[in-house]
Image (cartoon, one colour):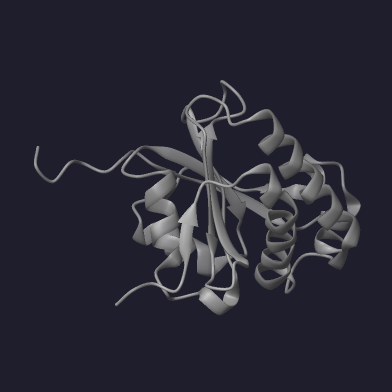
Length: 179
């Protein structure tokens, strides 16, 4: 059965749609535990600006970004993978983000996005501890929790986020079935 989406590498012209979709994805995924300003109009504008800058400059070596569009051309998901931000990170490669709008949960879209960005390679990620749906997803894809949790509010000195916990997960990389 053909999938009702197209997955491709975005261009700078996709930055606004990507930023709006990411903001909507944040609201759908986190509104039960994050303050509304995390996905409000100011944050949406910041996300659009971030994607505009990244797509204008081009991706770094090893970095992969894919968007998924529905048949009408609306961005309904994306995945971003690339080098870690710090040498202290537990793995040199990080799954920076993967979001699929709730209307596409359970369709296999997230699996395809993950495959096109991460493939069978190793990676770590940081995620909100209270995002249990995502935790189950990553566990099914070979990730495991690798260290303790920390408080976002203390880490970012943000009173509005105090009490929100973040965890790290890591995947060593899948073994080749033919090896």
